[in-house]
Image 1: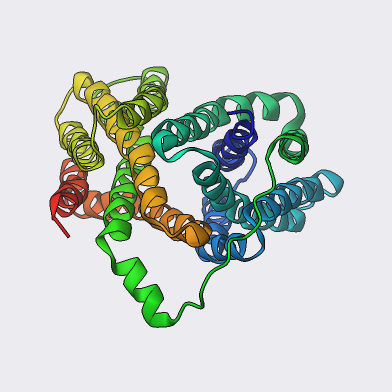
Image 2: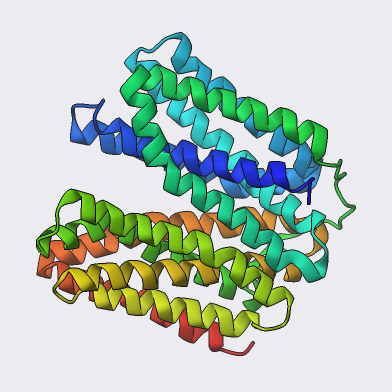
Length: 372
């Protein structure tokens, strides 16, 4: 367990770096267009680079990529601390996104390698819990830090956090040399990525993340439409995040104990997320809270089970590439869920937006139940 704790802390760092700054930049950047583009720079770097860094982790060793990514994240954060000009803010965010694209799939691959085959559910449940805590606490802590010291202090805290986690990883994470592997052709890659053992859990992760991201972005809108104030709507989003954090380790332990199968858990989680999105379309404050609980529980079920399934089916020498590709699926869901909901809502109204997005996890649940 001690060797996995720095990996969990790396997950916290990634989530805190993304969501803590994302929630804090709104008060610092005047232009909405510039704000949106600045947030997208981080996500774009992750989408493009995660599969590449995952493959690099297989080639040179996941521990080396993890450490390199953490050091690069600290350096990118220090760039803005040293010179808080607008240009360096853009460069720092791009560097942070690229660095997170390195250490995030490397951490996932190391969690899989360091955990026993019978304990991967619990291991990924713990990893997901720490990421959820970073995601939950990021906006709150980021806002507090911004209040007292501005963006420079926030970037300085992120640099210190990444540096501490890197030192911790040097001391506690054992060396994991790359495993020998045969040459892979494009046809081999296509077969691996098209196999149900890969695309089913990846599709589940993408759909659950789409629901989660849309819930975070649009439940406050639904709350305002129901007459709720900003404090109550913010509390609803916190309920969603905390539900996700609590359910993940419970789901992982149930998987390891044999009380829950991967297929059943993924299906239940996706249907819960779909139900939550459908409930959000109903009027009234009760619908907002119920939607937060259902979507949070659904994402909490899917995340550890999906990653545990990928770790179990991936060739050991391709763990990094597998995790990087799966993380790409999650990033696409993270971006695509709010985009789909927003587009339909703009054309036909918010209830239809919720209903349209609810179809996505429902279809993913059907796909997961399809036998290979």
